Length: 418
Image (cartoon, rainbow, N blue to C red; front, side, top):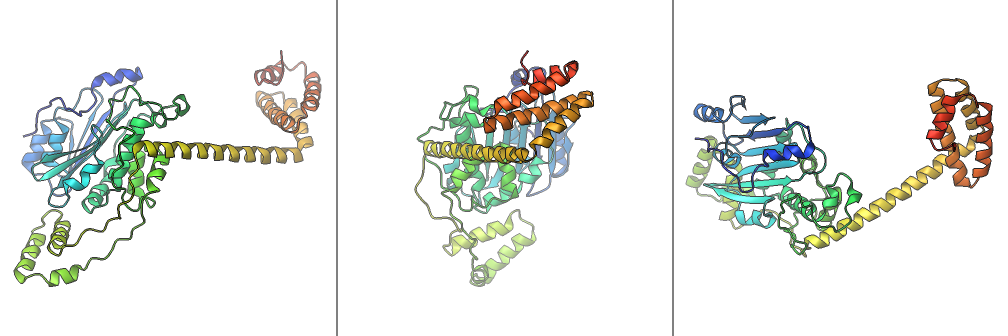
């Protein structure tokens, strides 16, 4: 039976968060997917007791709430019936959970990426529940979750295959939320570099001295699924770039599967073939793991390097952010220079266009004329010829002194003093 609702110690955020955004409507989205098997009729009947409006199939269940809350324990429902869960609340909570068979994945390999209240592992029978979540109250609200989980499902296969890039990116996201609140603020310059974490975040207990976990290979080569993961959790690209600096580029090595299988006793081959024919979940990965263990081989992995601390990564992020801002200012300055130099080549024509726009005696004409005068004023400041500009504008204002609509727009634009 489905577990009854109970306080969750990491927990889904409760309804009081709705007030944080005034009159905005509440939205909570739970999507479960079964990947290794299909639900039975009895299991589907059990799941319907959680909500009469559940969108239920033999491989998925979707619950959407605008009022009220989920009546079950999401982690227990995942552990009992499904292999993946995506949860979104429009006040800022995002959560992705996978059920992983312990026959394939080793807990000790995943634990270095864990951060209290952000990335956790729980044992449920023969499975591990991997829970990745952020709880924040700033930034863009999500009001739809449809289709997001399907795009993230391949991450589970990657983790089962020993690709822990998603786990490392989740760890970086915890660093960003705990140590770099400016990256999550609606106005990033409201928070200075290195500022303490937001008081609204009930902390992941990740300190600046925390060493980073093993850096997986190929972080410089992120596929569309990992990009979707970064987008879903709103991971700042500067954090991704800094993490990738220590990531090796590694090509998957071809394991001698044919040789290994040829060395097996005939009875062992029949046993493995029978398991495959019976459709055992994840049988290809299970067989590969058994072969590695039998022949003393390890899954391809990167060599370990010097571990940085979360604080050192933050300092690198801040440096990259400053360099990026400096480069953007240089590009904007160059673009402005080119624009003004192009305007200088047609300055005489531009002044004629100002007069022609005013002579239309329409609102659109006045708006166009004021915009053109603004560009000519910027050109005059760039060349140090403000007096010349002021003289020519005064002549135009005098020429059209009876056009109050033009004068009022010119005044509103700050080009004409009252």
